[in-house]
Image 1 (cartoon, one colour):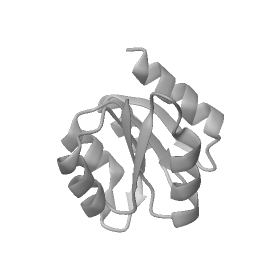
Image 2 (cartoon, rainbow, N blue to C red):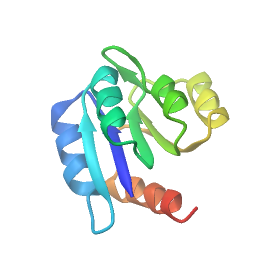
Image 3 (cartoon, rainbow, N blue to C red):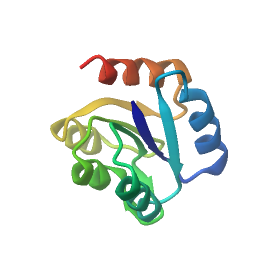
Image 4 (cartoon, rainbow, N blue to C red):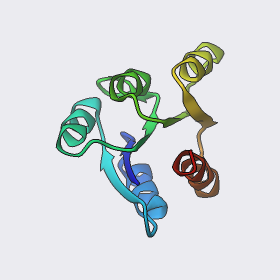
Amino acid sequence: MHVLLVEDEHAIRSALTRGLATPGITVDGAATLAEARAKAAMRHPDALVTDLKLPDGLGLDLAQELGVPFVQMTGYGTFDDAVRAIRLGCVDFFIKPVSLRDLRRALEHIAGR
């Protein structure tokens, strides 16, 4: 399974990219929607893990564009954001800080679909 991880904070993106990569799961990190779109055009992901608010837009918009199962993370989410994510098919919605264990569990759920 190939995962696209979109997180604008370098330290978090780096840690999650390394921590989520396991045998059978490759992870490609991006800091912005533009970078994520470029990477998705080169290799379409099987799943998306994205921050809600990014420097150039919302991770939910990318999730809707890609049409793949996704996990949403945010430090600034509202109830309306969570509802929109669920309506778009969000597998899990996390408030930061997110545990690596919980993200792995969400990705395992996606892989088992």
